[in-house]
Length: 510
Image (cartoon, rainbow, N blue to C red; front, side):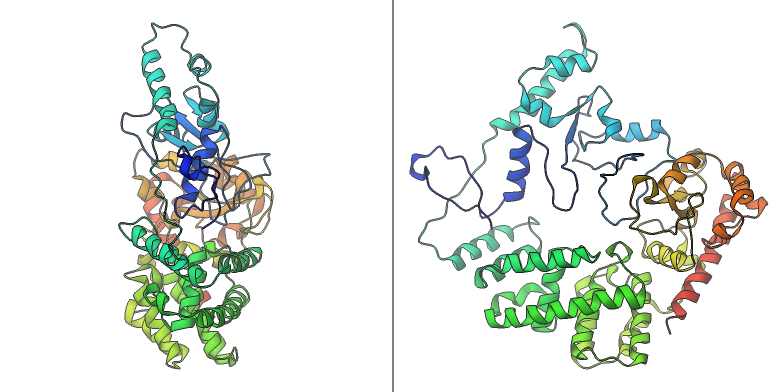
């Protein structure tokens, strides 16, 4: 809860300093847009500008963020994700998708289209003429004139919307106010359980929010910008030996403060172990951040003294749990509590590994497991990890693949080996996005290939740079597999190769 200026019409609250209990983020963003300003968001280098589609469908759609390419713009947001810039999708395909949307986060390309206008610019003036003229409407007889004018009026009508504000009496204690906050937000899915837990914790432990935020920032500087809720879950694990927030109301300030210090030490251990022992140096490579809580708690319970065998086994557990998606299936909190219980009771890493066997059966990767998986799969993240360890490089710049390259043209992207534009007439988007059709290269290289057929761009590349850059990413270069008609055979062969290197990499952890 932080200070927020609220416009007051009632004289009873005029010149009174009020605290906004709930809705700050929504009101801050809405206020900025209505004042004709971009929206600043934590973690982004640039503010967000929203675009409004004058040709939107009658049914309004949600705001969607669109990823765009930038050749020379260094000020791009690096969220640590492996990004598909859709460089091999046709312009027509992209425009059809965007034109079904009402609001999108602004991109340079969409800003150039006459029927996409900045929301902040609409609120700066009550005149429609600039926007109608830009859309090519020059007289009242244009059939779009009335439709666009009505839509602009409806957009500006947001200013007239009446927002309800309930003011709590001064006689209520801080704990009572917090209880009201928790109860109101427990009706429906308005807030996550971590948000409600944060309200209860900060009600008891004054000024703790800034302490939590400072630690979150410190972790982000090491490459792990984690959700504050994850740090709170780690705190609860250290305080109670389990991960659920249900008991947070019973914890005393002394317990919270002691557990937070221990949780911070544990998280430092987990991040160091993950980065230096496992090779995972970004949350983008994690199938779930819950593995950090297990690692942190394990290190703490062992007083941060591990044998060489323990360290090897723990590395193996971390890799298998990540590639198999241990916390991404079923009830993730239940699964996390199972692992925390093993650690709390003094169990070994072998017992954690046995839990993986109970969940998945075999712990090696079968080629069939890759079938139908896409870039959101845990397997995809480990695939990047393995290719990077094998020395994979961009096919033109020969820069080693990495998540933290500076400069837009070197930013890592995943490339459809058989371009989607080539496949779209004969296969579904799901089939084109198969994990076995994806490789890691730089943005500029990706755009230079664009939608060229594999059989056309691959042979010249092999002649220029040799076979090794493709071998390190398990890409078959047999001539008979490069033809469009051999797409499914190509996928099958590449899956076999990927599964082999994944298993070799994970087994090496032992």
